Length: 178
Figure: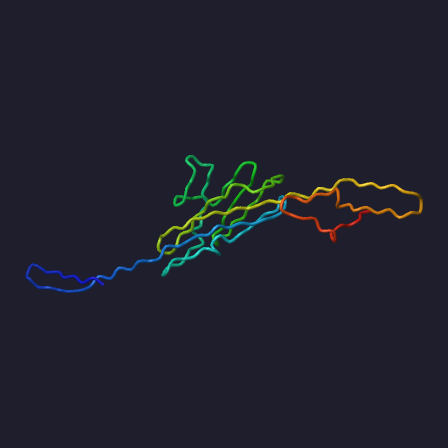
């Protein structure tokens, strides 16, 4: 505490103290999700973020930084609740800080991370990123065998199939269709 003194025009003196309170700054951490082709992905952006000492993060203040505006929005001046990136998909955030990524029907891959910001109850801003990854479909190709009548034929049909990037094929999931 810092002591101080005031004197009025009659020469009377009063003493008191001034005690400043300094709140800790919030921190935000990167978020990522992975999902299949044309499947929405969701993440609560503030779950892994941390309020500073003496503060509380307000999920309703989460804003997305729209890189398609001119100039592109940057933290701490993000204002979007919905951002659409052509050829990639649409991001939207609700009042609980939950972002939903709706990829374009044929989009696969990992787009550039989308920046976001969140504000605490003291008006302090923290920012980070959200990165979704969309996994494509596996590829199956025709297989054929030949042999004499009444002789069993075998083949490993997974030999010619391929998994999408970042995934593996599981033999126990193979199903024969009539």
